[in-house]
Length: 171
Image (cartoon, rainbow, N blue to C red; front, side, top):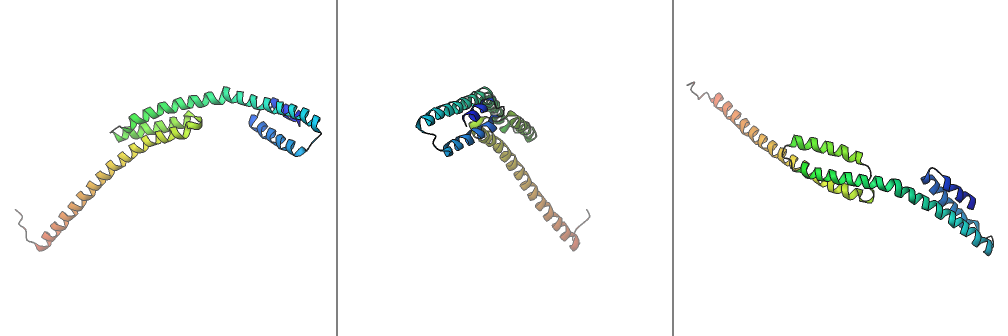
């Protein structure tokens, strides 16, 4: 088991190797005792191999994943600032186009780590504000159009009534 744990230090796929290390740790617990002195010596070697693997994994994470997450976070924070501006646009065509572009760029920005959901909630709140404002505007226009339609329909009915009574003068 010690040799297998040491071999994980050379693994390319650290996610797969992590699973293997955890499996080795489980096997270690199930292996039973080899005698106190031997157990102590083997445990120290096994623990050192596991610790070295996890140190390597952490170093890789700190050198690759963490910087990518920080970059994504910065991009998303900038997109939130743009969303604030877009949310306040009165021209709904421009605002809708702006939010389509912002959404595409949001998806391209990448994962921002633990703060990703918080950033999304903030971004989406501005987006929802804009679309709710747009919906309310068009709902109001549709209501007015419906009222105009009903008024015109009433005028048509009144005209039909007058026509049917033939009580009108052509002048």
